[in-house]
Image 1 (cartoon, one colour):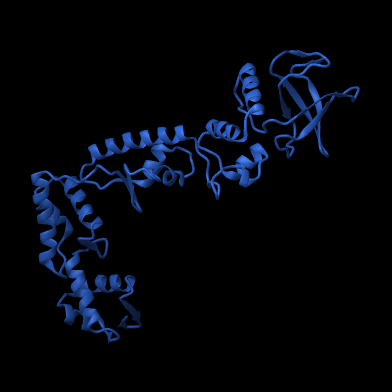
Image 2: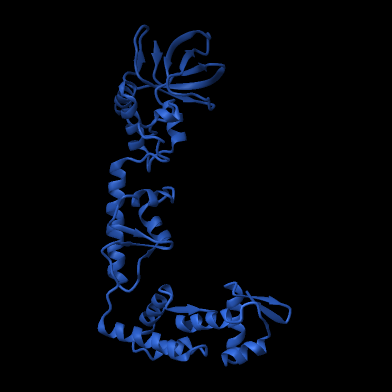
Amino acid sequence: PLKHNAPLHFHAWTSETPATIKLLETNLLQPGHKTWARLLLDHPVLLLPGDRFILRSFAPPITIAGGAVIDIDPPLRQRRAALAQRTAALASASIPERIAQLVRESPHGLSPAELIARTGLRRDELSTQAPPPDWFVDPQWIAARRADIEQTLAAFHKRNPLLPGMPLEELRSRTLGDAPPFLLDHIARDWPALVITAETARLASHAIAFQDDEAAALDKIESAFAAAGLSAPSTNEVLAHCGLPPAKAKTLLQLLLRQRRLIKVSPELVYHAQAIDALRQLLAARKGARFSVSDFKDWTNVSRKYAIPLLEFLDRERLTRRDGDSRLIL
């Protein structure tokens, strides 16, 4: 008879390794009987479902059993009876049922390569879709993650009504855990309730709504920068005089920057978009010209304090190119 937890020699193809057998339905298997079993191999062996193997005793080295691989990576922590039931179901399942079960058991889905290794199927056999999906996810997992995302974003919008959305990385870490980052795009596909931009995510129902004092402060901030032209005002002074607490005033400033109504030229200097547009037009009228810092100061009527950061900004925007002590308008 074959005992539960007995040490054996495992042989498959040309591979051989010591192993321990876990009998799932009995503690002692009599000759001529069958049972589901789990084999713990001392060394890794390349196997696919359906591969045949034989088991030999250590001493004397005689063949005592044989079988076929059902699953190469079954759940680690599962009672023997439950694992036997699972193995039997997997062995009798159709291809779609087997794929669905393996995907359902995975923490966050499986790649085609993982499914090929777990099933022994070819890629074109994995799905009736053509081409097969690039990732297989259980629909219930998608539904659960969508519920988490909706709850997380609703709470974020309530706490931050003036922000357009939650940073994508924060949303991923809070709702997807260690799942591959690209699965957020998979979840968002064909889900109109979620809006994703390059940096943020929001519920489609979310819209920035200003209180009266916030709307007035927003207008004050924007008007102050618009009136200053290319002689940018002190950002701290503008925010201090807008009528809101510093934290909320900074939020409004960030909103104007995200909407490109204000443009940050340097860490210290912020300009209204109209001033930058006028500067672009000034340069366009002189396209191809070579000029000095002094020329630029004369054209714009600004001091060196503003001229140098503006010129460095124009270089970064590839509107101008520095060449020694002069610049060329591109």
